[in-house]
Image (cartoon, rainbow over all chains, first blue to last red; front, side):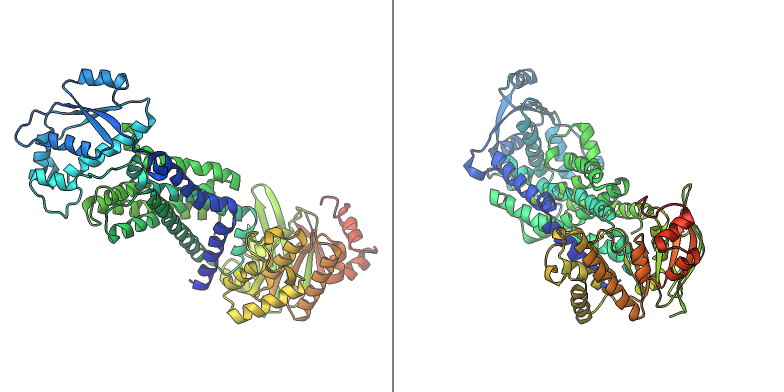
Length: 386
Length: 248
């Protein structure tokens, strides 16, 4: 492989991204404008007041020995984004929900504390755990509530199951106090990790357009008359789009930071977040190649790319904060879900870079992205010689 | 280099139920300027694509520079320069950037690339516009740039597929002069065109292809004399009963 060729082709691709207004907008400006607009709507940008959502809580837990339920409710209140109202029965709570007096109702089931006790007794042996389900009823008429409340509750719940296995477990009450986020947290901050993922997804469209355009204008054929090998060509494309994804991530992060998302994590968490984005860009190149294989023209490629863009967007980023159970199952099959999950663990749950959750996400993202890239290259090479 | 720069032996190319090239055999000598003439759809570009290794013949053998195009593709690519029929250039790059990209694909060193780039820009009359983005170029300028891209690495065998189509007479004349200069340097040039005047002026020999079949091969003057007509256009009419440019 000749580095001179790879460098020349990579430089060409970067120049294309910077010089073509439509590409520049879609890759860099659109994510930043989106983040800023989103920040104005849901975050602290522009001095907007913090939204507070009314959450009704029905406590059905009968456990008295280690009362996790009270700690859980305290932790929810401490987020200051939820105004917790306690109900003695579910019917009253549901009536208030239907009348719009609260935006969500949460049922804490009997056995909730027992479940956490069993978890803390043997945190690494799920077969010994008592499983319970916390039911959540949401105001369907409030799009904001359905988007914002589930991830907030999920994050608080996560602090009880100690996402960072590197930390030695301490007595329950103290451990909870140390993990609960007490600072004022906006809905925007809960969605910020998904925004990193969001920006990179549009690379699918760019890759598909780039390959189909080069086919249409005869450049792909022309390059094939030179001694450039398929490996050199594909390497240049992958490097180009990884660089573009990196620049995107830096810009989006700067925009998010500007709005006020400043997670209190160390450098390794930031570094790993960027590594996740880089690896994720491989799957976007792969999906782009699959799209370019199917699409005959660049216009068709733009439309077809949404077949891959939308599932990644709705199932794997902040957009899917309140997915249906079917969609939650489907989300496990898109790489963006694992990227967002890992970034959420790192930035919001305070998980260590070597925690089980993050490592599992890393392995899943790496394996799936390499597979998708390989599938894209094989498919494209089968129908159009590189 | 071998006596023959290009050899085609009984080459057939089928696209599903269409035979684009039909049992063509052809020998082009090293240093020869050979013109392949024919109307659109006659099989000229398919022939060039097989010679460059872009298309695999359905049957028959193709040798360029003494190398089997299918088996020794990399060796062939190092020898040849190809100017395709489309004005294939990157519109978002400047003229210089396009040239340097292709120079780097042929792994030219910086000094050689710089010298070849400046010489070719001057010869093709693009020196003044070299730093402009190609999207601002006229059709003729893009075509001249496309020729530069094919020649940047100083190839021994050059394929020019309709290189002067759409050019103004002045630009066309400049390209003709340059082709003759390349021939004097000993380059082998394989030219496809449907401009009969171009073929008559430039080519040592021409081949006339129609419906995929090579129906005549000889020096332009010999063909004109053989068929007792005034020019190559009339040779084509005599052979096919049609005007070459009716279908253009």
